Length: 107
Length: 121
Image 1: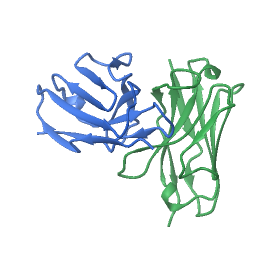
Image 2: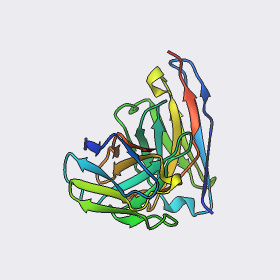
Image 3: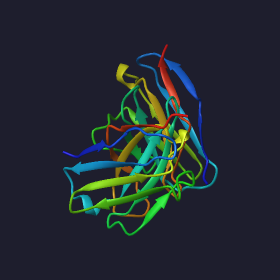
Image 4: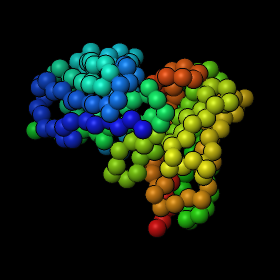
């Protein structure tokens, strides 16, 4: 199975900050990498697919990059509604696997 | 507008069975693979099972292989997860998710709101 490792596990930031979350795959997954946002008590929401493409309706302050084994999610100007948990997910190979999550909290 | 509505969750004893449903609307259901993902209380997301658009290809996590069966009825636009021999570690919120293609490498673009399954220890 492909292991996905996110860092940091938690992050405190302020409105207006720029933050970056990293995700490493235990083996190459090309660009078959998605980023998912989940707010407490809510269903997950897909943000980014193919490592860098935004899902419809996702604000442009979200961006993704990477290929192979190293990926990043950047939020360029944090808004109050961005405080949530973020997961990376590989869909290159079954079983599909997720990172452990990064909890983004308000400082 | 795409909508995915899960149902069928509940409290079930260890060793029992349960069938989850995911009613889909707003898209041509048979054209897209579908997936079940679960989340244990306070934990992260865990992929459970996927099925191709036609229903002829299925995949399972090792943790549920042989106990869970994914299926779909394209005439009813509904995805199912038949769960048997349930264990305490199956306790979770279960989400269905729509893929962006019928099979192969594809990401999820829409998620349902989830249905809870509780198996007391």
